Every structure is written in structure tokens, then in C-alpha cells.
Amino acid sequence: MSEQLGFSVKSLRRDYSVTFVDDFAAALAAALRPGDTLLVDRRLAELYAGRLEPLLAQSPHLLLKASEGQKEFSRLSEIITFLVEKGFRKNHRLVAIGGGVVQDITGFIASILFRGVGWLFVPTTLLAQADSCIGSKTSINFGPYKNQLGTFYPPSAIFVDTSLLDTLSELEIRSGLGEMIHYFLVNGRAEFEFIRDSYDACLRDKVVLGEAIARSLAIKRAMIERDEFDQGPRQVFNYGHSFGHAIETLTDYATPHGVAVCFGMDLANFLSARLGYIAEDLRQELRPLLAKNWGQARLSQIEPGQLIAALGKDKKNVGRQIKVILTRGLGDMFKTTLEVDERCRGWLQEYFRQAAREGN
Ligand SMILES: NC(=O)c1ccc[n+]([C@@H]2O[C@H](COP(=O)([O-])OP(=O)(O)OC[C@H]3O[C@@H](n4cnc5c(N)ncnc54)[C@H](O)[C@@H]3O)[C@@H](O)[C@H]2O)c1
Ligand SMILES: [Zn+2]
Image (cartoon, rainbow, N blue to C red; front, top):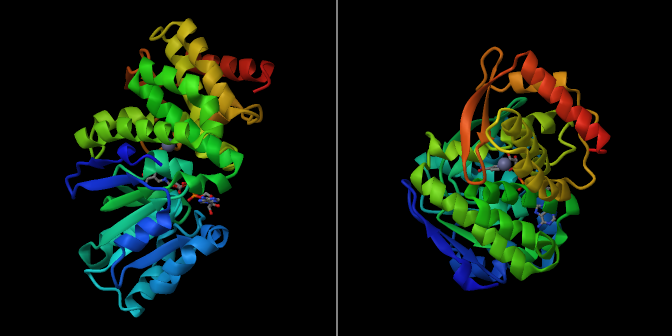
């Protein structure tokens, strides 16, 4: 993998590096110091047993199940107990190897243990490589409440090894690509055209996928360097997400995050067109890419009323008003308040009727 894809990210905590590597195990072997402790996705440890073996033999480590349950606040005490009992010290570092779940657990613990220890990250899902690995956020579940606790605490170094993506399911790849498409649309027409024209190649060619990952991260980097703590401008990245989260919940998480975000973007585009912010032509221009990525996933089992109810549960919303990101065009997303009145309900019904007609 081309080393020139690497870059560094400015952070108010500490600047950090993203390096594209051919062999994550070799990169880590060179970076590790005595006492550094690995937190590894258990499934990954099975799939890459051979490559991980020398690292696991050399360093204290804990294998974690990548589940939302494992990301629950009370479950962290087992991990912290393990670290303290193994003699983990303030000058030692945590090393996360896994997707967003292992990232969130490791980043959160790193931010609170001894008031903050260093950590390194090898993202192993496409979503983690192209999106979550940068941006400083750590999020932990509190009981049934997802991502309600968190800190801003970036790792000091990130090693992206795209060969790890070979073992992901097609759904996991679509989820990552959906998240990437969202960055490209938020950025503007040139990046939309890039992903539209290279989407198919991304599925079969690691060089093209590596470039797309780097471009997606570059878009996110420019924004987080401006608004690391999500105080305003960064909120445009919620494009597709209010609706997407509602769709994830209503399908019991059978629709993976990035796929749900593609439906969410289509819905945001539909409402933007109905409200006169964009021409219907633009919505129709963007739709084939979104539909290609949601593939066989379907919305047909969702009722508009359920969607409105699920949106209403979002903590950011009050009464009949919903905070959403709509668009005035590619690269021109903006936050607004949607009044859930009869007109809006009618539009949502129309959207779902259309989706059912088109077999979505
Ligand atoms: N902190 C952030 O900025 C941020 C951003 C987005 C999402 N998240 C969080 O990330 C989590 C989702 O993360 P995710 O989508 O990266 O996946 P994940 O960590 O939930 O893993 C998904 C599945 O893929 C498996 N897996 C991981 N790498 C693999 C590989 N290389 N080959 C085969 N299987 C592999 C895991 O074992 C798991 O079964 C959610 O909890 C979400 O809240 C955090
Ligand atoms: Zn997302």
C-alpha cells in the first residue's frame, strides 16, 4: 500500500498520524514498547492468528467480543481490572486492533485511566479505516442507551492495512462504503463524481479502495481540524444520520449503519427537493449511487409513523420539531428544524409509497 497516502491530523489534544501499511503486524512490532497492552477483536484474533501470534506472544493482551454489549459502561470494569492487575502503568500504551467497537472501548478507557494514557489503533473494518479512526470521539453505551458516554481522545498513531478488509462480509463493506459516500456528497460535486465513477472498482481493487479511504479521511480531517469538538460546522456530517439512526433502530440493526445512512441521505434529499432546496433532478442524479450501495436492503417493512416516532426519541428533538441536515446541493448541507406537521407526514408517506413501488 502506498505510503504517500499517509498524513497527520492536528488535534487540540495532540497531533496524530495516519499511516497506510502493507502489514499491520510488522508496523506494530516496530512501534510497540514493553508494557504496551493490546485489546484485540476476538474474531480478528482467530482470522489472523498467524500474523498476530508474535505480537500476542510478546505483549499483554485481552481479546474482546465486538458487540454493543461489550461496549457497555459496566463491562469496562473487567477490562480496567485486567489492566491494573497486569501492572499497566501511565507510561504504557493501549493498542486497539479491531473495528469501531474495540476503538470506542480502548479510546474511552485510555482517556480516563490514570487521567489519560497513550493509545495506538489498527482499524480493521472499512468503516473504521475510512471514517471513525480519526475525529477523536470515543463513545460508550450506558445500559440500553447507545453512545451516551464519551470523550474526545485521539490515538497517537493509526495504521491502516487494507488487506484486513478481505475477510469482511459484503454487508460490512457496503456499510463502510455508505459512510464514505456520505463524506463525498458532503464535500461536493468532484468527490461525488469520483466515488460514483470508482464505486465498482473499490469493490475489486485494493489500490482504488485505498485511495478512496484516503480521500474520505482527507474530507473528514479538514472538518475536524476546524471543529474537533463538534461545536457547529462538523454537524453537517450528520447528513443522512438522523434518518439513518431511526432506520437502524426500526430494523433492529439488521440494516448496517452505512447502508441505513444511504437510505437516510436519500430521504434527506427527497425532503430537500420537496422543500424546494434542491431540484428533483439532483435527487434523481444521486439516487442510483445510493441505491447501488443499499443493494438488496429494503425499507418496505417501515411505516412512516414508526419513523416519526423513532425520530422523536432522538435526544436532540423537542416536540414536533426534528433537527435534521438537509441539502441545498452537493457540498452544501445545512442544519435545520423540520416541523413534523401534516405536510411533512404526507411527504414521508409519499416517500415510503414510492419506495414500496420501486421495491425498496
Ligand atoms: N468513535 C467514533 O467516532 C465512531 C464512529 C462511528 C461508529 N462508531 C462505533 O463503531 C461501532 C461499529 O464499528 P464497526 O462498524 O467498525 O464494526 P464492529 O467493531 O462492530 O465490528 C463489526 C464486525 O466485524 C468483525 N470484524 C472486524 N474486523 C474484521 C475483519 N477485518 N474481518 C472480519 N471481520 C471483522 C467484528 O468482529 C464484528 O463482528 C459502533 O459501536 C459505533 O457506535 C464509533
Ligand atoms: Zn456514520
